[in-house]
Length: 95
Image 1: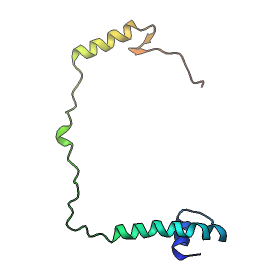
Image 2 (image 1 turned 90 degrees about the vertical axis):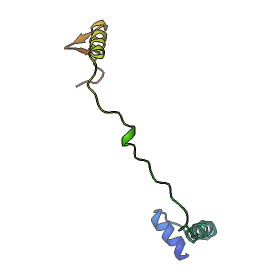
Image 3 (image 1 turned 90 degrees about the horizontal axis):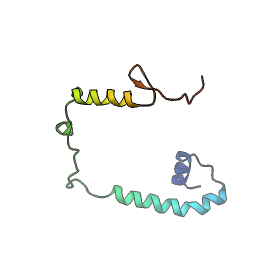
């Protein structure tokens, strides 16, 4: 079995029989040759994209307004069941 094919098979945790190695060797070699051609590219003049800082795009955390708190409390009051300011729902998981 070819050395590159052995490495790829080991990394992929594959056990190849002799017949499978003969069948897959040209395919693996073609893939590895493509990777080698990419690795040989001269990229020193290529500018890489830099991630933008998102710190300026985030809003500051703020406490809920009084209106939102009142609306939330009103929704809980209007629900079919509530307990201690929370929605009361049927138990779905047994203990």
